[in-house]
Length: 109
Length: 193
Image 1 (cartoon, rainbow over the protein chains, first blue to last red):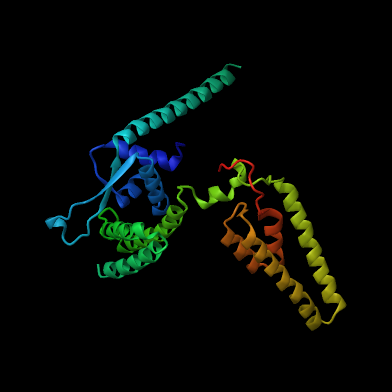
Image 2: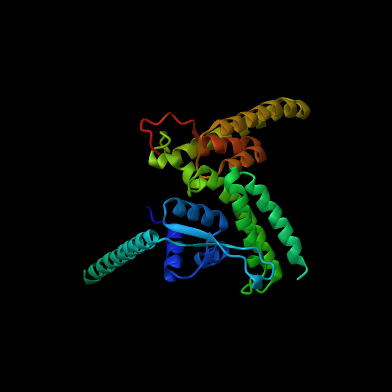
């Protein structure tokens, strides 16, 4: 799995609260992604078994609102997402340290 | 807000039209899922202006059209990523040097302009226009045909190149041929990508 910027944002939103139910628009707003990017990504994650979806049960108090489809990570998805995100953070930290070291070196010269 | 039901109907129609692209088993479910998002957008409390909510709902529906196209292809990659397929070896044509290609295009354009100017001087205006219209139309058709047969193009999506070719008859076509053209792919030696 290649961790791109949009994918990283989606995974961060999904891992932030594992018990939360996210519907499409909710994820779009939280991850700041257009619908044309988000849904194919979710479909891919679902195919890979990392995300599962379920239809909301029709509620009495919904006020005629049609049922939504909710997405959340599977157990495997949680594991993979945490691993990938940790890896991405470590890489970012590593890059930042490299830059800091280079700057320090240039400063002493 | 009296606008919301109106917008919702338009957006639903757009979504239904996009869903028609999907295979049967996906169509109904996706259509239901996406239509169910519309009330959430149109009654989003965090957006104060009704106009912006309406625009958001419409852009959502347009995005759904992109989503269905990508779902049909079965990948999460954008068309731009496809267009630059030469990068991962899908298309075995090297990009070439952009500066060289652009210079060649510029020279071709200057030649065309000087040819047209000398044509205008040599013939009476009416005739010159007729004489230059025929090759101009032929050139535009040639560019569009080439574009239609191409497996991939560079820098811009195909439709944008087509628009450029038609809008600026000699120079747009020259720009496409010199900068945007990749041509047809030779079959890749490995079956990957």
